Length: 140
Image (cartoon, rainbow, N blue to C red; front, side):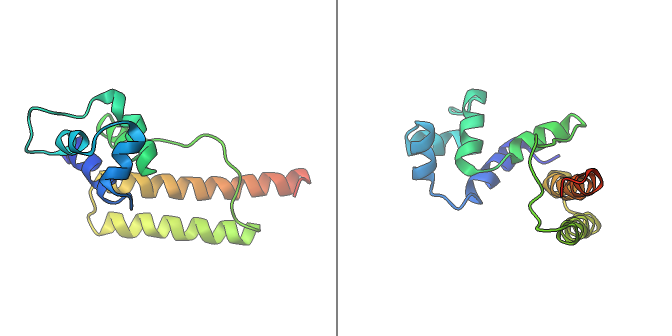
């Protein structure tokens, strides 16, 4: 099983932001956050109260997805409108998202890496249903 600490470290590393900027946003010194994220420093660990601010600063819910996955659950975002310009756009986005998920699964990617792809595919497929509902109700 991939450790939650690894998921958090990957999230920070892949955020596209510096550790200094992330630390400042969540109200910590860079050295403190660095110690809390280090797998080699048993004296300092990231507290659960820091996790949500850290996810917001990184623009990722990867740790939340991993926690849900560890417990046999998945996440679904709340609300949202279709982002495609038409039904055709939504169908294409759904196809591409499902294809990305299947390719990753067939390539043997870890399930914590599959969860965001699954979430993205479900979101795109839900957008198709919203477009169909709007079409059938005369709203769009």
